[in-house]
Amino acid sequence: MKVSAICLGIYAIYLPVAMVVHRDYVQRPRPIGDAVEKLLKFHLDPPDRWVSRTYTFRTANFPDTSRISVYEDSTPLPRQNLWFTPDVGVYVIRIKTSDGSDPRTNGRQHWAVGAFAD
Image (cartoon, rainbow, N blue to C red; front, side, top):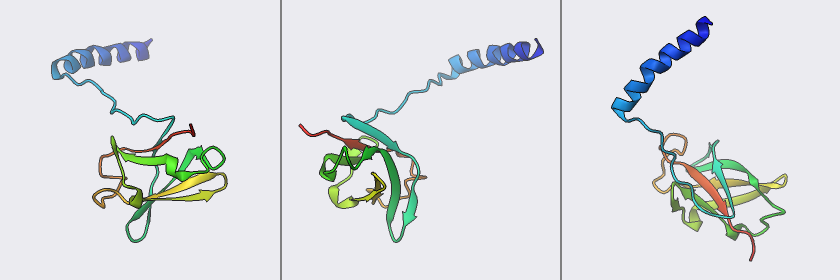
């Protein structure tokens, strides 16, 4: 009973403050494609490439990597900034960001986007 009262009290304080400050969460738009996956974990592959593993893009479904693009927010990275390596049925994606920054801290979202064969 005390926990419910505390939660209601916190909510009663938060709601008017949020309305005054106009803090609404708006999700960033994601790219459009037949398959879209947000790339979350990156590690550095010296000197300037960042590596992430994809789980949506299986080598059996996407044998042709030319149908896979990587986007920084809503802008596709150039093909010369992308490298795909098959690894146990999925792809390891190496990218070079548009400005050479660290994708873990640059504030942009990175997406792997694929199109199935016509």
